[in-house]
Length: 276
Image 1 (cartoon, rainbow, N blue to C red):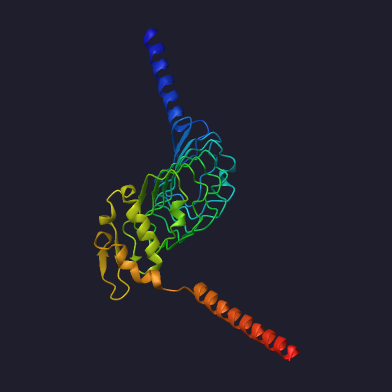
Image 2: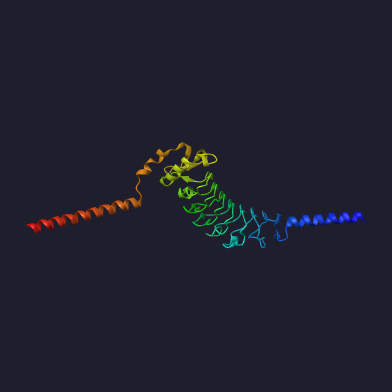
């Protein structure tokens, strides 16, 4: 009789372990190794899975074919701290999609088809510490205020994208930034790159491989050179280059001075005529 009881206990233990692995509310095609983790990596998904537990904290969706994230997706998942969407088919992130997740600490959007990072994408993610945006071959534009509000961000990855230029404001607005990866982009060493070059030289300790790991194309012949071979003097001509705004100010100032001079001359001539 005792052997039967032992076998029954063993079966119950195995069933319990299976239910623990699957999870009572675990999506059908996913695994749930613990009550707060949902692992749907490499499942060939073309959309986000249904019936994700509301108390999920780690959501793994890497290596699928997911093309978009609904703008209200994170509204219900307020406990989510780790989101891995690496190697999917995301072409854009709607502004505000991630701003509702104030507890998000880790976000991986690398190896997707993103083309730009607009303003407001990460609006309220003030707990975000690590953000991966590398290996997006079509990512050519990052708004200057794309990362505004990410006051806790320490690591930012933007390597191997299609960036030829980047506004310094996008980086200088990150007070906690410790590591930034920018290598592997087709940087163009023109006057638009001058301010970024100065920032990189002053913050080279934040680059994993220093400026030696970055290259840019010279505007004259397209030849690629290491940033380590350049200096601030390489962009000396840019300091004398007038922008359209500068030219308009000069023209307006010249016209104003001319008008004032004409009015002054007319006033003096009138005064002299009256005395005569």
